[in-house]
Structures are given as C-alpha cells and as structure tokens.
Image (cartoon, rainbow, N blue to C red; front, top):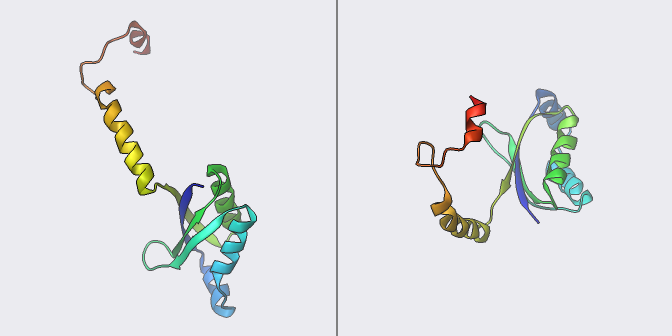
Length: 122
C-alpha cells in the first residue's frame, strides 16, 4: 500500500472549537482513514507553517485525494498538502532503473536527433 503524508493547517474557527471542546483529533483522522481501508501510521501537531501532519497508507492516489477532500470540505481546514512517500527499497530500485536509463537520456542542449515534426511546432 502506498504511503502518504498530508500536512494541514486549521482555520481560526477550528482552533476556537478545539479550545472550547478539547479532543484527540488523531482518533477522528484514524477512523476516516480506516473507513477507506487504510492505516494511519502517525499524527502530529507541529509549530511553523503547518499545524500538523498525518502519515498513512491507502490503496491509491484517488483514495488519498478523497481523504484529503473530505477533511478540507469541513471548512475548518484551510490548507492541505499531500505527498506520496517513497520507501528506501523503492528508492533503491528507482536509482537502479535510473542508472540503466542514463545512457538513453539526451539533456536539453544535448546532441539529440532533430525530427522534421519539430519544425511544425515553431
């Protein structure tokens, strides 16, 4: 299952509600992730640009987008940013593949073959 991290920032109204009625937001988040067949790995609040982040595993990008969309649609989260994480074994495989492809890549300004179809593009 792919792993994702979603950073979030609460609205001032959300903070007002959480202060008035303190609760563990990780419980609600875990429940939502499990409802789509996923698993939550971590939930943290933090200082700085973001109020917190959640690390979780779901089946695919569409499911991660649905999770993010539901949370944002509450109107109490003003900003989210989701990234798919790459485990080290996957990164190692990617690097091995990149090494094999390296000789096939022509960088910009390199000695690539000019095709007549390019001329019609201007």
